[in-house]
Length: 449
Image (cartoon, rainbow, N blue to C red; front, side, top):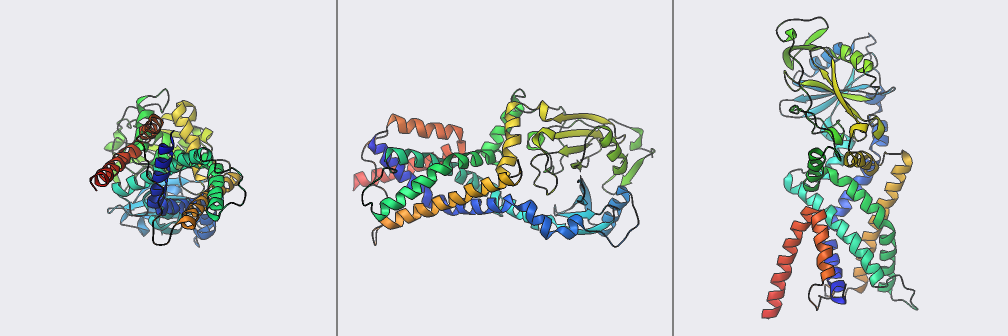
């Protein structure tokens, strides 16, 4: 690229950093918090996760679920999360307004206690990290846009480091030169791992995430295998990313719709008859599905029980190795196993993100993954800090001291670089149109003056 392109990239790098730094700091700090949510929740909620009720009578899991309903009459059970010892069983209960609470059953299936879902540490960190705890389409787009522009900052930073010979040893360097060198050194070191973290997080994003998932569904050879029926309407956040929007098969029709059948239980959520959870646990064991797993209740009369093991649940104690991922479907009336989708059935794209998401979240290979992600995040914060320190060290009193405007037209290299980023990250591409419009107006104003 020509010198004019260098100045233009430097200028865009500078203004982009000013605009998105508050968001990047928020996302990085909340990401650090989320890295350690299992460690924090195991301590903070130990009485619920591992505690025992004062009632020592042994109940069946269906009786325990019935007690939870009695204690929470305005809520219905949508999920049962069965974990390995020493974790207690966890129920997800939802009321008519969509509010959720988690109710915990001990090893006798007695109720230990409950907590509001939205205020758990993991959910608070997740909400801040993905939607700034505000939510809404606009905020989701804003978060994704910040991630896209962070990619731009990292790539242009690498280019300017080597094109501008920032790492060159200088005799008697000035303070701004020293600051710029440190900013460049740490930025160059952290760039590749930070890009990995960003791109492994984008499958959850609003625009790019949908594009990736739709491609995964449209082309099963690289994505996920398709199942034929309509998906249930219930929230299924514990289902693996690769099968979250799959269409599970419907349960077959049974006489149990109209009369009692052995082993079936009536629930307040649905006046039809379905197999009890206790019996379903037996069917799950017969299907060689080991703990931990989540059981998602059928969404309607033709729905199925969905049993899921995932590498990216966001639930303390529920994550498994990507190789162990499985989503299985059981008839809600007979409990008969219908079908399942496992890791080996995924295409290369689904497999990549099945590994990438737990890598992003910091639990793919235990505490070393947490430590590496923590170091990368702290280094990224250091880069941001030193970037502003660099600007302040050369900023003239009373002036903004922005990088000089490009004196020449757009080069082919610059256009190709920006076009490629816009294609890879569509939301970034749309934001470029706004930047071009602003630059065009500025150019016309300067020319007129």
